[in-house]
Image (cartoon, rainbow, N blue to C red; front, side):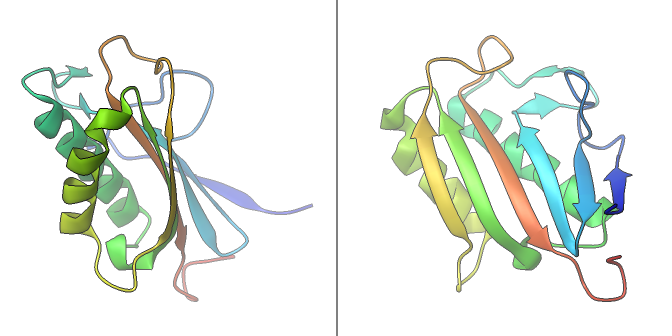
Length: 134
């Protein structure tokens, strides 16, 4: 039986259903899809698409840090956009958080996301440092 450990931080929004913010298993950190929710306010950032997408990366950063990782440990990202016209904006914000060599990545257009008004979602896989994995 494989071991897994849940990762939770109050700095990122709580799960919207029966799942963990992130799970550590097999030396990797698997972060559930993050929306542009302001954890302190408990609501979606609605001021602009740019601020909502930026908040996604802030939330991911908090979860990475809670697990002892950083953006440099990310090996794979999957992005979801409700409008592929937002791809250049998503790319520009993404590029502010990652350095070369960039993680592997896929981005898909979806008809809707779990929170009404959400324009993007990001899930992430990061490699744990050897002393933190099990």
